[in-house]
Image (cartoon, rainbow, N blue to C red; front, side, top):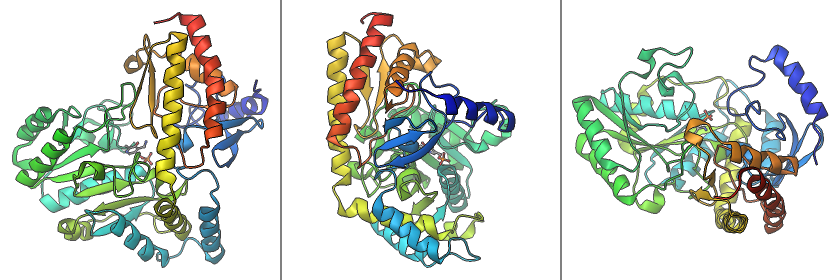
Length: 415
Ligand code: PMP
């Protein structure tokens, strides 16, 4: 079983100089015992913490690692660009190559713009939609995450004002009637409908988009002139290279990408249709590091590798093995679970837990016992498979989760 002495010492030092010890979703503060706060190395599907403990990584940096840590082709492309320089007073030539590649990959796109984080991309997309329509209101699903920016925060959070979230109405994901009602509230001020690739909110079962819902929001945008924004930050390039709604045959007007776009290098993109081109050109948006070359070189290598390898079907295959193994183990231990979402990005909820109310004692015990034995899963966020996960990783992970299920059964009984 793992020990965490160096991790404890680092947490102590961090507490003094980093408010709250650590930030947001990458903080282990609220994760159970057995989770390290710091990683020092990654290779393929494995990561190592500050104490040298090794884990099979099923969080993949919350999504960015899609090919595996330190993927050879990505690292080589990044190193070659780094040897020439990264950050200049104008973009590198890589930006044109990457914009061409992304615009080709994304069926609805006639152009692509770049930034750094997913939040940049969703805020950017909303600004383009408002500039294009000259209207203000955005409809968004209640409970969906679109980034940390004030415009996306829940009202009443510390440091935010009520005005930050003005001009927004909420709807229920997959409930088209609720979208129609919200659009009526917006009237002729409706600028955009924002949709997640699928419902992947923390605390509830994941839901794939219902085809009728997707068609409905598309038609509503066409009828009202509003812009359909797809927040593909979390799912993009893991499910489909042409955007996560490509399988539904529904094209958004603008997509926000980040996470898996450059296998861990910081990059985000907004890809939009030609009718939004003038609006995109008119708005002011920039950042000191947005145009740096290394991340763009890494992105070209990542997207090219995803295009030319079996990475996507492989993730689906190993994801299905993990799902089948876990569901069978839960059954054999008599522990009730729901396991939802695409197998490449699954979410596990234990019957008896109430994740929507942050009551996740079973999930915490399960994930903590797994972490102590070298399997890094999350108790309350969806997991991520990557192309480097092998069948052997899944077999080894399932040996550990068998023990973790037994612990849950012993502590909480069956369900
Ligand atoms: N949209 C979605 C769907 C996300 O999952 C996230 C990040 N979890 C964001 C936007 C924001 O991305 P970032 O954290 O890179 O700003």
